[in-house]
Length: 358
Image 1 (spheres, helix red, strand yellow):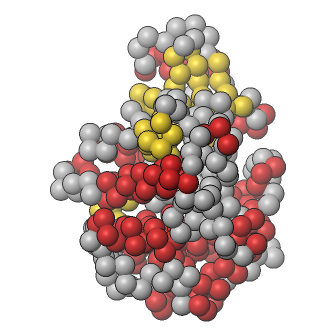
Image 2: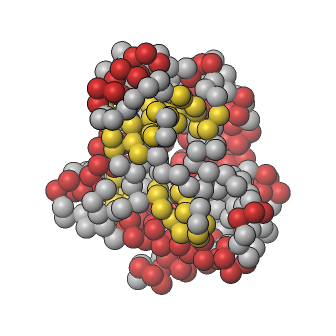
């Protein structure tokens, strides 16, 4: 069984921190820390660096940007901490922020510390000892979706929540922002996917469906489950891209990771979460469930589906670019170039079919 604590491994050499400076800052910012800290690194993420820091029986989590991350608006740890602090009162699944540091001299980049939520984080497959039958898996699936639906229902009239977004025009801003990131992330030999970008430009909706709080990276490995009841969500992680925006964009982003048992072999090979397991909803069932629970008119979902795949392709290319430029030696990033190529092909397939979720 995978847990938020047992997933931590020894820190990679390239990601080591100045422990003396880190210890001094943490003890000055958080009451009650004693002794020498023990630090380990979570291996699941492919973007920001996340560490488990133990002071005896007390555990906390540290988040910082990776070396070489310079994209405008990307890897903004202080904004992520501010988003989490603003949402905590309205959405209890957000881990509490314990301290924030804007001085890069401490560990080489701005960072923040948050509470550690001991629990289960699912990765590629459901562990056999999780003890869930088909009905239990379905309950897990709908519970995870319900937490997304609850997030989309958070009251955005509160000033601290409203301040997270820029108002109407979210889809338009996302199209411009992600196509720009794509162009800046290209490396030699990368397919520029000009046809995909042009299709998205031609098909993008002229108006947002509505404005709500969106997570923007909602998937199973960003959810913490209760060890006593692995169908129950006790936490939601990775709030870096959360904002006020169109909920269908959030749903499309989540479905980009949603691989079904009957998908083509290349898509199955890219699977990073257990959405293929017996009892999990299909992508079509996810849309129907969301529409029924929220009263949302899903309509033509093809744009949101393709944009979710395209955005995932951009993220993978940004990470691969860091690997190609030697800014990280993490071996798990070596295959991201292949992932980019496949996602481009899948975008084209969905465009040709008029959407795979209908």
